[in-house]
Image (cartoon, rainbow, N blue to C red; front, top):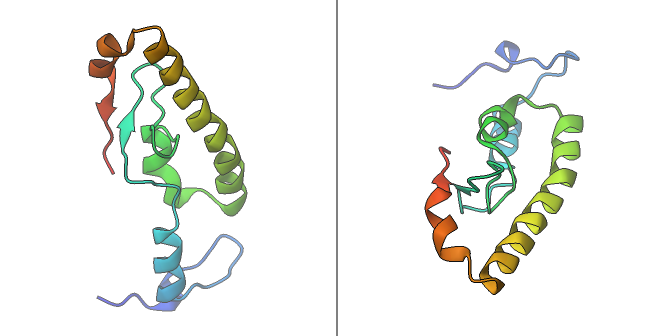
Length: 103
């Protein structure tokens, strides 16, 4: 079913075409990994939490930009922690605490 452009309006009154809406829906930080760290809840691929993944399409451009800046640090932190755990020989016990995310 095609949605009439008049039915879709931004808070600032700007109407968006179907093509614009589809393009925005496809633009997410998702990397296709979709496994969350058991301690932080951050996805190993994109760094988002389940709530951030669920709410992504409702965020405005400023919220998305701010979050995207944080995500790089989150993923780096997860990778560094995982490397340190492996170097210390503790990776085997932690693997089971990670969980699949719903995307």
